[in-house]
Length: 160
Image (cartoon, rainbow, N blue to C red; front, top):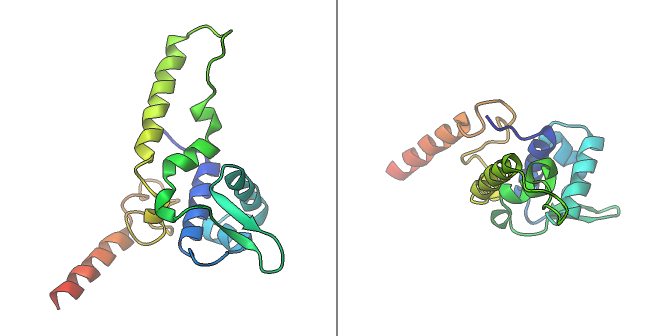
């Protein structure tokens, strides 16, 4: 099973928290709390996401962070490209020899990231297919109990 590093998981949670508040700036401390991490760690990830073009910051008393694009225009693939530099790797130079093993893994990584391109951060912001409350629990990220409850409530509301 392919696993993303903790930094990527935290970046996804921080971006999803920003997506939940599209009309306002949020404090890095609030994003850290939502991601269940320290302020220092969140600040480092925010800086990385800012350099990667996914977040913008506003300094000052009324400052904070926000997404650079609408949440549905930022995919999990975009996040992985910014945070998983060891997975994506670097392009071969003119001096490097072709290596079939590296080529096989590069192709698999490319396929993996391409599949994540179809999953927008906006889908993670609410109780859709992924719930922030359960995103850190192994095996429950895509089968959140809140999604089933929300679906039942929506069905009940439609039948009334």
